[in-house]
Image (tube, rainbow, N blue to C red; front, side):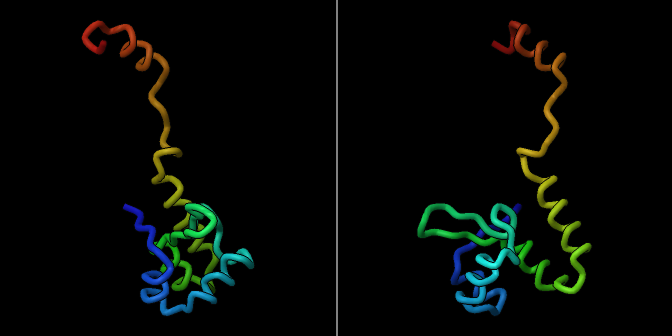
Length: 97
């Protein structure tokens, strides 16, 4: 399960200042929607697992890219949907209604 945390917790775990984390976001070092998400104009959450991987693999972007791809593949929005025939069967099955 992916853990998104606030600035204080991410700062402590990663041993980075809040200003450094902001700079990485603004300069594009960290990708919005992957490394961090904006909840609203005042609230940002950080993907702790991917940021730790980013720190570990700063000099190996290919390895970090694999971690990003694994994260994206694990998202429900990236899961393959059931075949159409299976979907049709469930909508016509009287026991499913």
